[in-house]
Length: 324
Image 1 (tube, helix red, strand yellow):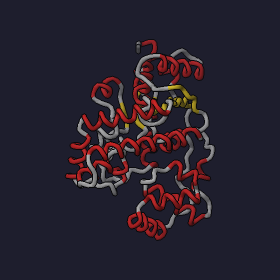
Image 2 (cartoon, one colour):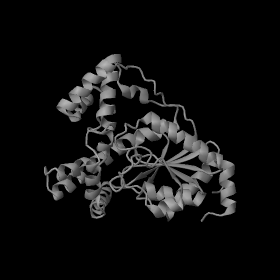
Image 3 (cartoon, helix red, strand yellow):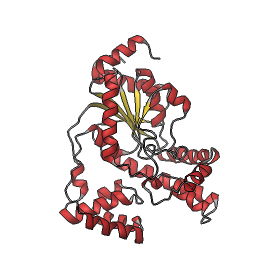
Image 4 (cartoon, helix red, strand yellow):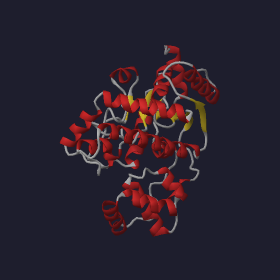
Protein backbone atom coordinates (compact mmCIF):
# COMPACT_ATOMS: atom_id res chain seq x y z
CA UNK A 1 0.00 0.00 0.00
CA UNK A 2 2.95 2.30 0.62
CA UNK A 3 5.21 3.21 -2.28
CA UNK A 4 7.92 5.77 -2.99
CA UNK A 5 5.40 8.20 -4.43
CA UNK A 6 3.24 7.97 -1.30
CA UNK A 7 6.28 8.52 0.91
CA UNK A 8 7.24 11.66 -1.02
CA UNK A 9 3.69 12.98 -0.67
CA UNK A 10 3.72 12.44 3.08
CA UNK A 11 7.12 14.13 3.34
CA UNK A 12 5.67 17.19 1.67
CA UNK A 13 2.61 17.46 3.94
CA UNK A 14 3.76 16.08 7.29
CA UNK A 15 5.45 19.19 8.72
CA UNK A 16 3.21 20.33 11.55
CA UNK A 17 0.52 17.81 10.64
CA UNK A 18 -0.69 14.98 12.84
CA UNK A 19 -3.42 12.38 12.59
CA UNK A 20 -5.03 11.36 15.88
CA UNK A 21 -7.29 8.33 16.23
CA UNK A 22 -9.33 8.20 19.43
CA UNK A 23 -12.29 6.42 20.96
CA UNK A 24 -13.22 3.94 23.68
CA UNK A 25 -11.30 0.80 24.51
CA UNK A 26 -11.95 -2.17 22.20
CA UNK A 27 -13.23 0.07 19.39
CA UNK A 28 -10.40 -0.88 17.05
CA UNK A 29 -8.29 2.30 17.39
CA UNK A 30 -4.99 0.47 17.31
CA UNK A 31 -5.87 -1.55 14.22
CA UNK A 32 -7.13 1.51 12.36
CA UNK A 33 -4.05 3.51 13.34
CA UNK A 34 -1.84 0.68 12.14
CA UNK A 35 -3.57 0.59 8.76
CA UNK A 36 -3.43 4.37 8.34
CA UNK A 37 0.20 4.64 9.42
CA UNK A 38 1.22 1.78 7.13
CA UNK A 39 -0.60 3.32 4.20
CA UNK A 40 1.01 6.71 4.72
CA UNK A 41 4.46 5.61 5.79
CA UNK A 42 3.75 7.05 9.23
CA UNK A 43 4.73 6.20 12.79
CA UNK A 44 2.43 5.60 15.75
CA UNK A 45 2.59 7.39 19.09
CA UNK A 46 0.63 5.50 21.74
CA UNK A 47 -1.64 7.81 23.75
CA UNK A 48 -2.41 5.21 26.41
CA UNK A 49 -1.59 6.08 30.00
CA UNK A 50 -0.85 2.44 30.90
CA UNK A 51 1.06 1.22 27.85
CA UNK A 52 3.93 3.42 29.02
CA UNK A 53 4.65 0.90 31.80
CA UNK A 54 7.04 -1.99 31.30
CA UNK A 55 5.64 -5.38 32.18
CA UNK A 56 1.99 -4.40 31.76
CA UNK A 57 1.66 -6.05 28.38
CA UNK A 58 -1.34 -8.35 28.07
CA UNK A 59 -3.70 -6.29 30.21
CA UNK A 60 -2.96 -3.05 28.37
CA UNK A 61 -3.26 -4.66 24.91
CA UNK A 62 0.17 -3.56 23.75
CA UNK A 63 0.96 -4.17 20.08
CA UNK A 64 2.64 -7.47 19.35
CA UNK A 65 5.95 -8.09 17.54
CA UNK A 66 4.30 -8.22 14.09
CA UNK A 67 2.62 -4.84 14.56
CA UNK A 68 5.82 -3.30 15.91
CA UNK A 69 7.70 -4.62 12.89
CA UNK A 70 5.08 -3.28 10.47
CA UNK A 71 5.00 0.29 11.82
CA UNK A 72 7.34 2.03 14.30
CA UNK A 73 5.68 2.73 17.66
CA UNK A 74 6.60 5.27 20.33
CA UNK A 75 5.86 5.82 24.04
CA UNK A 76 5.44 2.15 24.86
CA UNK A 77 7.53 0.70 27.72
CA UNK A 78 9.10 3.99 28.76
CA UNK A 79 8.52 3.75 32.54
CA UNK A 80 8.78 1.18 35.31
CA UNK A 81 5.56 0.22 37.12
CA UNK A 82 6.63 2.00 40.31
CA UNK A 83 7.14 5.34 38.55
CA UNK A 84 4.52 8.11 38.71
CA UNK A 85 4.31 8.92 35.01
CA UNK A 86 2.59 12.30 34.68
CA UNK A 87 0.64 13.93 31.87
CA UNK A 88 3.37 16.56 31.61
CA UNK A 89 6.01 13.86 31.12
CA UNK A 90 3.93 12.19 28.44
CA UNK A 91 3.38 15.45 26.58
CA UNK A 92 7.08 16.28 26.60
CA UNK A 93 7.97 12.85 25.19
CA UNK A 94 5.09 12.85 22.71
CA UNK A 95 6.01 16.24 21.28
CA UNK A 96 9.64 15.17 21.00
CA UNK A 97 8.49 12.07 19.13
CA UNK A 98 6.28 14.15 16.82
CA UNK A 99 9.19 16.46 15.98
CA UNK A 100 11.52 13.55 15.30
CA UNK A 101 8.95 11.75 13.12
CA UNK A 102 8.28 14.91 11.14
CA UNK A 103 12.01 15.53 10.77
CA UNK A 104 12.24 12.12 9.09
CA UNK A 105 9.59 13.26 6.62
CA UNK A 106 6.99 10.92 8.06
CA UNK A 107 3.52 11.43 9.48
CA UNK A 108 2.85 11.10 13.24
CA UNK A 109 -0.26 9.08 14.07
CA UNK A 110 -1.32 9.63 17.67
CA UNK A 111 -3.57 6.77 18.77
CA UNK A 112 -5.15 5.94 22.07
CA UNK A 113 -8.01 6.36 24.48
CA UNK A 114 -6.50 8.54 27.19
CA UNK A 115 -8.32 11.74 26.30
CA UNK A 116 -6.28 14.10 28.45
CA UNK A 117 -3.05 12.83 26.91
CA UNK A 118 -4.37 13.52 23.41
CA UNK A 119 -5.75 16.95 24.25
CA UNK A 120 -2.65 18.06 26.16
CA UNK A 121 -0.35 16.93 23.35
CA UNK A 122 -2.21 18.56 20.49
CA UNK A 123 -3.11 21.85 22.21
CA UNK A 124 -1.38 24.61 24.13
CA UNK A 125 -2.18 22.95 27.44
CA UNK A 126 -1.27 24.86 30.61
CA UNK A 127 0.47 22.69 33.19
CA UNK A 128 0.92 25.57 35.60
CA UNK A 129 -2.66 25.51 36.86
CA UNK A 130 -3.08 27.46 40.11
CA UNK A 131 -3.73 25.85 43.42
CA UNK A 132 -0.70 23.95 44.68
CA UNK A 133 -0.06 23.32 48.35
CA UNK A 134 1.92 20.32 49.69
CA UNK A 135 0.06 20.29 53.00
CA UNK A 136 -3.35 20.21 51.32
CA UNK A 137 -2.22 17.51 48.92
CA UNK A 138 -0.78 15.41 51.76
CA UNK A 139 -3.99 15.67 53.75
CA UNK A 140 -6.06 14.58 50.76
CA UNK A 141 -3.62 11.74 50.03
CA UNK A 142 -3.96 10.48 53.59
CA UNK A 143 -7.74 10.56 53.25
CA UNK A 144 -7.54 8.64 49.98
CA UNK A 145 -5.38 5.99 51.63
CA UNK A 146 -7.70 5.76 54.63
CA UNK A 147 -11.11 6.04 52.97
CA UNK A 148 -10.34 4.96 49.43
CA UNK A 149 -10.14 7.16 46.30
CA UNK A 150 -13.75 6.29 45.43
CA UNK A 151 -14.96 8.27 48.45
CA UNK A 152 -13.04 11.35 47.33
CA UNK A 153 -14.35 10.80 43.82
CA UNK A 154 -17.91 10.99 45.17
CA UNK A 155 -17.07 14.37 46.73
CA UNK A 156 -15.58 15.54 43.45
CA UNK A 157 -18.76 14.44 41.68
CA UNK A 158 -20.74 16.85 43.87
CA UNK A 159 -18.42 19.82 43.37
CA UNK A 160 -17.04 19.31 39.86
CA UNK A 161 -19.11 16.72 37.97
CA UNK A 162 -17.34 17.49 34.69
CA UNK A 163 -13.96 16.56 36.16
CA UNK A 164 -15.40 13.59 38.04
CA UNK A 165 -16.96 12.28 34.84
CA UNK A 166 -13.57 12.28 33.16
CA UNK A 167 -11.48 10.86 36.01
CA UNK A 168 -11.31 7.18 36.92
CA UNK A 169 -12.78 6.73 40.44
CA UNK A 170 -9.62 4.80 41.35
CA UNK A 171 -7.24 7.46 40.01
CA UNK A 172 -6.26 8.89 43.39
CA UNK A 173 -3.60 11.21 41.98
CA UNK A 174 -5.91 13.07 39.60
CA UNK A 175 -8.81 13.12 42.08
CA UNK A 176 -6.54 14.66 44.72
CA UNK A 177 -5.30 17.24 42.23
CA UNK A 178 -8.85 18.24 41.26
CA UNK A 179 -9.92 18.60 44.89
CA UNK A 180 -6.74 20.52 45.69
CA UNK A 181 -7.40 23.07 42.95
CA UNK A 182 -11.01 23.46 44.03
CA UNK A 183 -10.12 23.92 47.69
CA UNK A 184 -7.33 26.43 47.11
CA UNK A 185 -8.84 28.48 44.30
CA UNK A 186 -12.58 27.99 44.63
CA UNK A 187 -12.70 27.15 40.90
CA UNK A 188 -13.20 23.67 39.43
CA UNK A 189 -10.20 22.28 37.63
CA UNK A 190 -12.48 21.55 34.65
CA UNK A 191 -12.72 25.29 34.09
CA UNK A 192 -9.17 25.11 32.70
CA UNK A 193 -10.22 22.46 30.20
CA UNK A 194 -11.95 24.87 27.83
CA UNK A 195 -11.00 25.54 24.23
CA UNK A 196 -7.24 25.64 23.84
CA UNK A 197 -5.17 26.90 20.90
CA UNK A 198 -4.00 24.00 18.70
CA UNK A 199 -0.28 23.37 18.33
CA UNK A 200 -0.54 21.15 15.25
CA UNK A 201 -2.57 20.97 12.08
CA UNK A 202 -4.34 17.86 13.35
CA UNK A 203 -6.91 15.58 11.80
CA UNK A 204 -8.68 13.93 14.73
CA UNK A 205 -10.81 10.89 13.96
CA UNK A 206 -12.99 9.17 16.55
CA UNK A 207 -14.36 5.64 16.45
CA UNK A 208 -17.89 5.14 17.69
CA UNK A 209 -19.23 1.62 18.24
CA UNK A 210 -22.80 0.66 19.17
CA UNK A 211 -22.87 -0.11 22.88
CA UNK A 212 -23.99 -3.78 22.66
CA UNK A 213 -21.26 -4.53 20.12
CA UNK A 214 -18.67 -2.59 22.11
CA UNK A 215 -19.53 -4.47 25.30
CA UNK A 216 -19.31 -7.77 23.43
CA UNK A 217 -15.88 -6.81 22.11
CA UNK A 218 -14.78 -5.81 25.61
CA UNK A 219 -15.89 -9.12 27.09
CA UNK A 220 -14.15 -11.08 24.34
CA UNK A 221 -10.99 -9.04 24.82
CA UNK A 222 -10.94 -9.75 28.56
CA UNK A 223 -11.46 -13.48 27.98
CA UNK A 224 -8.64 -13.45 25.43
CA UNK A 225 -6.32 -11.66 27.87
CA UNK A 226 -6.98 -14.32 30.50
CA UNK A 227 -6.32 -17.11 27.99
CA UNK A 228 -3.06 -15.47 26.95
CA UNK A 229 -1.74 -15.33 30.50
CA UNK A 230 -3.00 -12.20 32.28
CA UNK A 231 -3.00 -13.98 35.65
CA UNK A 232 0.62 -15.04 35.28
CA UNK A 233 1.57 -11.53 34.15
CA UNK A 234 -0.01 -10.02 37.28
CA UNK A 235 1.58 -12.69 39.49
CA UNK A 236 5.00 -11.80 38.08
CA UNK A 237 4.39 -8.10 38.74
CA UNK A 238 3.27 -8.80 42.32
CA UNK A 239 6.43 -10.82 42.89
CA UNK A 240 8.39 -7.72 41.84
CA UNK A 241 6.55 -5.46 44.32
CA UNK A 242 3.63 -4.28 42.15
CA UNK A 243 0.59 -3.19 44.17
CA UNK A 244 -2.76 -1.60 43.24
CA UNK A 245 -1.65 1.48 45.19
CA UNK A 246 0.78 2.39 42.40
CA UNK A 247 -0.35 4.65 39.57
CA UNK A 248 0.23 1.70 37.23
CA UNK A 249 -2.07 -0.31 39.49
CA UNK A 250 -5.00 1.64 38.05
CA UNK A 251 -4.64 -0.31 34.81
CA UNK A 252 -7.81 -2.21 34.05
CA UNK A 253 -7.59 -5.85 35.05
CA UNK A 254 -4.59 -5.69 37.32
CA UNK A 255 -6.29 -4.65 40.55
CA UNK A 256 -8.96 -7.30 40.02
CA UNK A 257 -6.41 -10.03 39.35
CA UNK A 258 -4.44 -9.05 42.45
CA UNK A 259 -7.66 -9.62 44.38
CA UNK A 260 -7.95 -13.07 42.84
CA UNK A 261 -4.33 -13.93 43.65
CA UNK A 262 -4.89 -12.85 47.25
CA UNK A 263 -7.90 -15.14 47.53
CA UNK A 264 -10.48 -12.36 47.75
CA UNK A 265 -12.44 -13.58 44.70
CA UNK A 266 -12.67 -16.52 42.37
CA UNK A 267 -11.19 -16.24 38.89
CA UNK A 268 -14.67 -16.06 37.35
CA UNK A 269 -15.60 -13.24 39.72
CA UNK A 270 -12.39 -11.37 38.91
CA UNK A 271 -13.00 -11.73 35.18
CA UNK A 272 -16.54 -10.39 35.57
CA UNK A 273 -15.17 -7.46 37.58
CA UNK A 274 -12.65 -6.67 34.84
CA UNK A 275 -15.39 -6.74 32.21
CA UNK A 276 -17.59 -4.38 34.20
CA UNK A 277 -14.74 -2.03 35.05
CA UNK A 278 -13.75 -1.90 31.38
CA UNK A 279 -17.32 -1.13 30.30
CA UNK A 280 -17.46 1.69 32.86
CA UNK A 281 -14.15 3.02 31.58
CA UNK A 282 -15.40 2.95 27.99
CA UNK A 283 -18.39 5.06 29.03
CA UNK A 284 -16.09 7.61 30.68
CA UNK A 285 -13.92 7.70 27.57
CA UNK A 286 -16.91 8.45 25.37
CA UNK A 287 -18.10 11.13 27.79
CA UNK A 288 -14.71 12.81 27.47
CA UNK A 289 -14.44 12.59 23.70
CA UNK A 290 -18.02 13.74 23.11
CA UNK A 291 -17.03 17.05 24.72
CA UNK A 292 -13.93 17.44 22.57
CA UNK A 293 -14.35 19.78 19.58
CA UNK A 294 -13.18 18.94 16.10
CA UNK A 295 -13.42 15.14 16.20
CA UNK A 296 -14.69 13.54 12.99
CA UNK A 297 -16.67 10.50 14.08
CA UNK A 298 -16.71 7.25 12.15
CA UNK A 299 -18.80 4.20 12.88
CA UNK A 300 -16.50 1.43 14.08
CA UNK A 301 -15.12 -0.99 14.88
CA UNK A 302 -11.87 -0.07 13.20
CA UNK A 303 -9.65 -2.40 11.22
CA UNK A 304 -6.15 -2.17 9.82
CA UNK A 305 -7.62 -2.79 6.38
CA UNK A 306 -10.84 -1.96 4.63
CA UNK A 307 -13.15 1.01 4.17
CA UNK A 308 -12.34 2.91 7.38
CA UNK A 309 -8.67 3.16 6.45
CA UNK A 310 -9.70 4.49 3.04
CA UNK A 311 -12.08 6.93 4.71
CA UNK A 312 -9.32 8.35 6.92
CA UNK A 313 -6.98 8.65 3.93
CA UNK A 314 -9.73 10.53 2.09
CA UNK A 315 -10.25 12.87 5.04
CA UNK A 316 -6.52 13.58 5.14
CA UNK A 317 -6.47 14.32 1.40
CA UNK A 318 -9.47 16.63 1.72
CA UNK A 319 -7.98 18.48 4.70
CA UNK A 320 -4.50 18.93 3.34
CA UNK A 321 -5.23 19.21 -0.36
CA UNK A 322 -3.16 16.27 -1.49
CA UNK A 323 -3.92 12.69 -2.39
CA UNK A 324 -2.59 10.26 0.25
